[in-house]
Length: 546
Image (cartoon, rainbow, N blue to C red):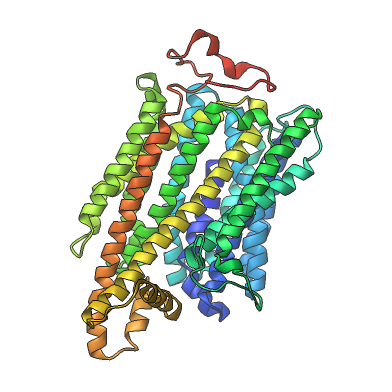
């Protein structure tokens, strides 16, 4: 299951660095290729919840095997794609749908395969391997794109899928439930609409604004900006309404004696919900960190994708080390305390990166703060997944796994949207402000914002390559002025982005106070009242509460 996670995580991060080359190969635009990335994430997020319930009705081994074969098929189609349409089908649709089955399935398999300390170690290793995959992706992708072809990035995944298919024989052949209930079609439809709308709203918010429109939004030839609003607010509102309808529908299904997509006692389980919220906030920080740091390293310090991966290597090593070996520490320190120590490590690492930001920053100077950040991630992931999933009965682990993975997808989308737009807004705004100061020009806030949007639309200048393309079109005097402006604006944007992440970390620390001191149902629940011990061994129909 760790190798499965590694392959799927590697897929997303590996192809991001190949976007410029893919644009040339398909003779298209960056927006079109980024659309494939966004659609992959959207398909995965939308289908995770219904896909996560498949092990409750079918053989776990069969579900894994079929998902891997489908994933391999999508990989083949993407690797031989001769047009962006074929790429969308293979990568975004087929691989995205298969990944929606695989992500929650990994949690489910570990829940039914291990108990207590072994389960904690398994989840810790899974989290560490996922972290390594996200960091090695740019390194492998950069090397393959530079020295061979981005298509080999897809082909390489086929080898991993073949190995996983061999080991799939050791996965349990039994479904989680002895009764095979029919799929909750109404709940499935509402969950897909809800998640799709929310993720789309977050994706659109960075470019088009959260409430008031930043620029016109067109669907084909028709503009959609009712009352001067951004499309994001309508998608987000629709997503929240669909989620409310989903909860109401599931309640009616349960009252009618039918099987809902997600049992309500899972959604009302306080221990499970506190873990989901903590997991969600951690994914926001992770998304923001993995967005702004690589852009900063390549745009200002001039690192290649390969060198950027090396700069983040301490994060990978520390995260897998602490997520694997700290799981047994709960015998001496409560899991809640370990999670909070991890949150503090993340905050300190981000604060050190903030302090170091400047022209003299080097990879060697970044080792300690990046390793501290990875240490914090490892300590959190070693405990939070096990703590959250152990709060529900094993019979409900498939539905719980789907909910947890949906929260991660939404959190990652939210983090990329909020932190990414905040970071780029500071960068482009800084460029405009410095140019105006250099020319001794004073403009109104509205005029200044119009200039920022115009700069964003006129030329993508957030990476070193695009900056150079833009600067090469200018006169030597203009080029000399703007080179310094670009650099100074990026330093300010990096500091602003890191400071925002520190604030989210503080919110994460507050949210962690609602976690239970010990893992529900564990052997070390000495701090819980007698009446609550062993509650996770109750029947699936009983809600588990701390």
